[in-house]
Image (cartoon, rainbow, N blue to C red; front, side, top):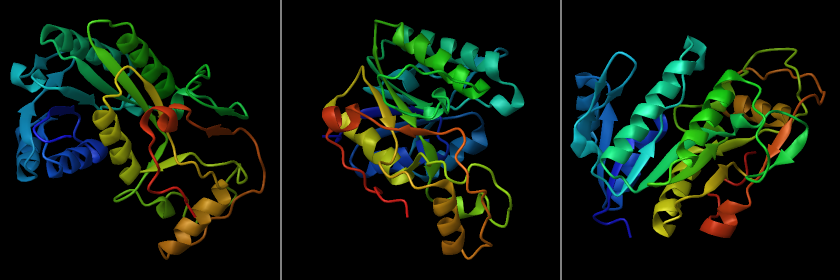
Length: 268
């Protein structure tokens, strides 16, 4: 199904590079973006065709060939801790302009379940997002920009907390004490399922949809992170056994549209 498909990935970080490698194994032709010559070399080593792509208030640089693709993945999370808010939206507007100019038809935008606040309830794709963090607000604004476009179809994937190679959850709280909200459920997704869902979207040509991407298993923070620390031979964290703000992220579209079965469906 993917043999010969042209896919461009804007943002070859932890997820983007792993996706590129998986797609190449399935016969796709993959272009990846980088923001420096050094990063371009690192992509080339992985058989990802590298392109220097920059969208910023100060500079816009890209080879039009990068946007010559069947599907464009956009995986560039906002750096809200460094105050990138307004610049991120400017960047998204520039990318959308390039998408329209080069007539890309199918886009997959990577967002986050952080667009849902912890309001002590279950949420799915039909729930009204009410972000209460800067990064959540920025991502929801970006989502709305893509939704407003009619010249191409955008699928939005809202990833839950990311775990997998290089992101050992055992290190998150190891050795810490008096950690609040120990009885709150976790919302996480393994890299294997980030990749699996992404490939399923291409296989099913599921463009124009919104998907919450989150493991169906929701153990408590205390249970999950304690087990993760033990598995990594680290000091066990100590949580306060309390339930404060929480949410459980579910999906109605992952099964109904994709028929996707999670590879990592049990977190502990």
